[in-house]
Length: 135
Image (cartoon, rainbow, N blue to C red; front, top):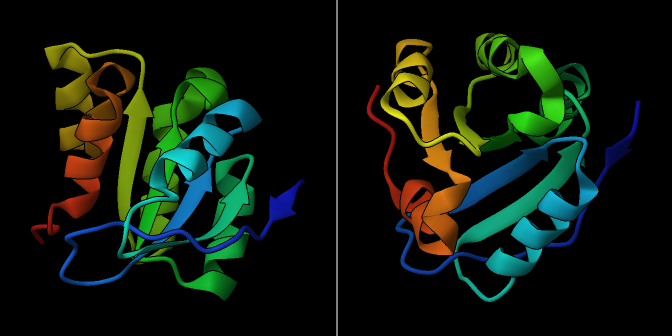
């Protein structure tokens, strides 16, 4: 299990600070997200985890407000791991996926997860991070 604390980055035009935990085994995707967010104001990347189990453990210490999960890097059980993580920690859980079809979005929505497609690019990711969760 690999847990990593990362440097602080910020996200602009967010009324409230976002404490972000990145989850995924693809280091390139996580580093790309960190680079994307490095010029923004209002978000702090508090750590990185390779899977849901390590994210749950890390989240207990770091108390993120938002968790961003790279679904494909978690394999066939990516969505189930995201749901389990949501059950275990009090944070907004966003799934990042290659898929951008209605079925993928609906499955995430039914599971209480927020969804963003990798096809949406940086603007799509930033828009989802800026949205206030509806409980």
